[in-house]
Length: 238
Image 1 (cartoon, rainbow, N blue to C red):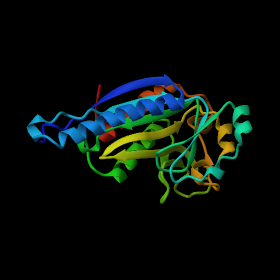
Image 2 (image 1 turned 90 degrees about the vertical axis):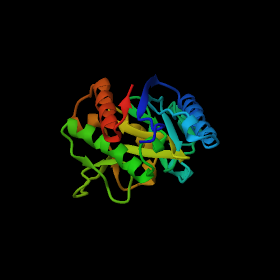
Image 3 (image 1 turned 180 degrees about the vertical axis):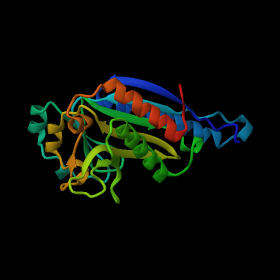
């Protein structure tokens, strides 16, 4: 085994944090890992340093984010409308279209050097989805995938009323990842009415609270998701 392989992942709970602040924080960590990988390429393998991995959990105040492939018209609010909703708006460097983040939603940002795990972005996305699927199963919900779409869905089999409970959007460079997933727990779902979520106008969004008909213990949901992420990626969380 390559002695430089590192499956340890440092977990950091950021709490409720401004989107821009969290984005800047991600960018700093991401750059440090990428820069280390570039430096490692210049020296003998025996002298190379291991690359660290991080898993960040947080919540954001009301914010809409538009990915690189997104269409600005999928935000249905103008500047005044954003002020009235006390929401902010950012164009960002992840894949995907527009989504919403807000209180009551678990936002998970894995900043991983995938060369410590596997070099397959498709597998990376599917494993993030799998962790959410397993968390939903913990609450008695049958969640899964819809062919051709990212994220985690309910009623995904017969598609009579497919509902998205988790959105994904990532960036990677030199096999280092950032951004991640947004899992609706006790999310204020009315904020989704101000966008065409992920550019999909014919499917609904939902939350654990909506599906279960009760408020969910947020810390418990975080703990379950954290455990399942560790399992599917075979992380050594610390």
